[in-house]
Image (tube, rainbow, N blue to C red; front, side, top):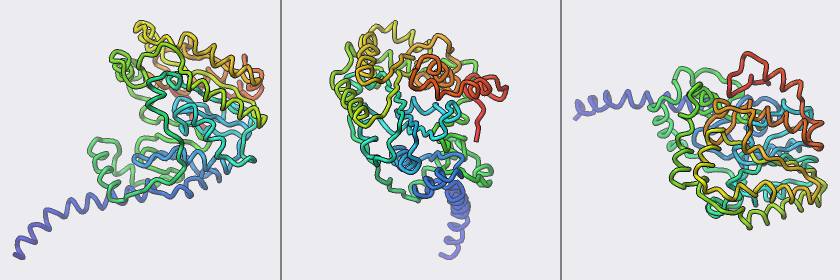
Length: 366
């Protein structure tokens, strides 16, 4: 019996040592750091990057930081708003709360959850086209929740083992010191939110450079098979438009100036959608939304198809990279009476000219 136990211990020892190293990785990377600690680091300026692998809690995080910072210029939208960076603007009181909302009703819910003193003077709203597609709106109707996520250390440990097996991080790299980093995505792949709320794609932004359509395959499939956010829709969704009216009226009642836009698709994705011939709602969507913005003194722009961008400037078939959003900011500088004076065209020009960037990303600043 003792011999059997010794043999069992010898077999178990490598496994125990391996998971002991993974436990050290979790602690070192602060994958399970309390939300209060991450928020405090953001507000204090000590945060470099926040990106967890298994505990995404964007709405809670963005709400907590917005309450603390009370930014005068606030960006609000889903994931296609997260590339708008603070260094695109001259307004120092800036925060990008992108990633916190999923549908049109959520915009009002987010602002209503803020104390009056934290409401912005100017709001830059990114409205995804699919938010006004009836099939997608019906599938994404949930309210926002700002509660804490339950964190299970042992479950996360097992998931981290799978991540290591898939090559998502190296033990040596993850065990090094990473001051200001929170989470395994931030430590392992350089992906996560910066202190201004904008998103850094890290290693993902380098995939298939020069061969961008390899990154569009999932979107192509969704278009071809009428799935997810690319299901066909003939006309803008009436419920979503009514929710937009409520949101804009709420902002107008509190003297919040609102600028918004439809974000871009890569040229090849726009071409494929046009060839599919099933997105009639896009034909009138801009006019429907712009009229509602104008009715409350706001401004709205359509960047669905940007002639001055190319496929290789997009992260995937749905998200533009830094350079795409820098170009959007330059368009706003020229065309928006509300936001134009706040766009730092000189800073954007320096970033665009820097040799440190690629077709998709710009140099990162503190």
